[in-house]
Structures are given as C-alpha cells and as structure tokens.
Length: 139
Image 1 (cartoon, helix red, strand yellow):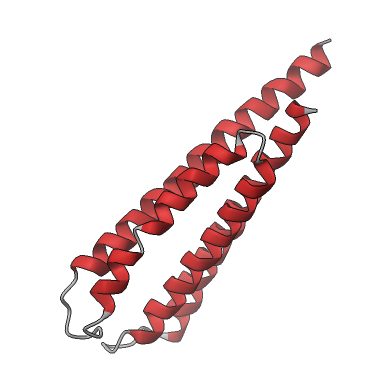
Image 2: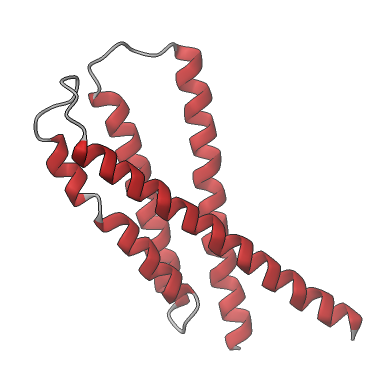
C-alpha cells in the first residue's frame, strides 16, 4: 500500500514539475516573440518584426498541447509540444545566424548553445513524462 501511494505521489510531483517547466518555455516563447516583433535594431533585417508577430503562435500552441497532454489526446499533445519546441529551437538558431552585429566568441556560442540544447531536451522529456503519465492514468 505504501509503495503504491509513494509511486502515485511521485507521478503527481513529476507532473507538476513538468507542467511548470513547460510553462516556463511558454514564457520564453512569449518573450522571444515580443522582443523580435518590437525590436528595431538595424543589425536585423526589416522583415524580422513580421516574423516576431507570427511567433506569437508558438506559445499558444504549447499551451494547447499542455491541455491535450492531460486529456485523452496525450499523443497529439506530445507531438504538438515536441514540434513546437523544435520550431522554437530553429528560430533560436535562425536568430543567431541572421544577426549582423558583433559576433560572440566561439566559446560563448558553444556554452550558450549547449545550455539551450539541455533545456530543450529537458522540455521534450517533460512532455514525454506527461504523455506517459496520462496514458497510465487513463488505462
């Protein structure tokens, strides 16, 4: 009995941590979209603010995937969340490539890039945890 209650508590705590972690990514995406849409830096192309306004779709999709991860469509929620995170990662790479200002040092690029890769992997794992947790509780 205690073993079952402990496992249930672990699943709940893991679910709460995963939701909070993915919600932090929603905030990252909102910040990136707003910064891109409202930035008038001459180092960026003229069309980039339009891309920034289009980026506001990403946090909406991630929020929708969080709701789907808790319902009967957890597989669709996981696919939306992982696709969303891949698109956001592509935007981050694109943003660093398009920037025409003073380049950062190679070491800084690798450190920041490695940190973002770890954050993205953790976010995909959080979405996967929520998907499997939902599938276990639905069966």
